[in-house]
Image 1 (cartoon, rainbow, N blue to C red):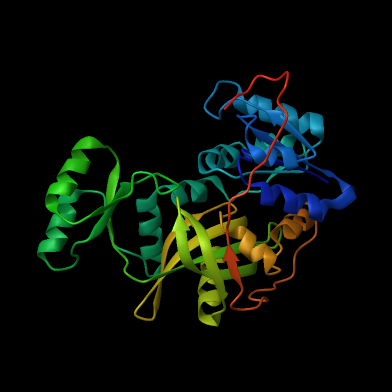
Image 2 (image 1 turned 120 degrees about the vertical axis):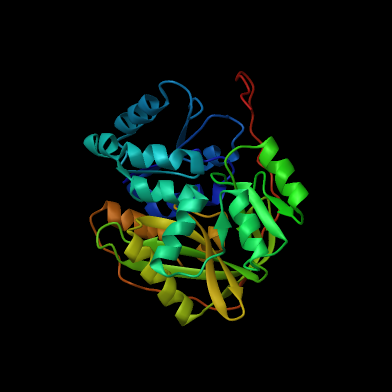
Length: 327
């Protein structure tokens, strides 16, 4: 069993987990566009590749899959997920299975307004969104929404260019400076995160891990505590299965006045997934089982509450003598 992890970056733990689960039965290969990406040095082998927007990038990845006899491939960054999902058949032709949800669903996840519309159609509580500032002003006059609000890119990640806004003047300025923005209701509640796995063979949701977010940094969970809520488990399981997600997904949730609101969905490992793994929610093992043709049993919420995750800084030191450093 050989796994290819694309754009590994600083996600050392994910590489380590897959190496641990595969053991001596296969290898973990990693890629990145920089040889200063620390996670690639935890892999059995790594390839330095062009940026995903460069001509020939896809062919380079397919060549690696052929050469290394890759069984399963997934990416750790948002911009690459649509590429992987859209080219699924080309990977399957050479025996490499993309661990990713269907293309249209991936695209919906990265278009925050499309996700808002889908959640509303499904009857799932979510924060109100507007892509036209005039619609927001009309709703504000009707008393349906009030400041503060968030102004953010319709398509974006890592909390880049998200602005907390308190006035019409700020909205006018941001909409004059940037294209493709949306206005999102400020959800003043406790934030939670969920790591969810949907079996690639059965289509059933087999794992849900929920954490209460205590501290965030650069859009990722920095400190969190595990919680269990059967009603939330049922809601997330139903959502994931109805939508047709595949593999691992990361979901942001807010609890407001006793109601859970779904905010954003990322069809990949979330930055806080190590918390789930440490609590026994082993998604790498489920990926490997699926790639081997085995369905995973449903095992939702089988972990302890009040287990805290606390991220801290670490360094990797690598001898680069004789190599060109590519940042």
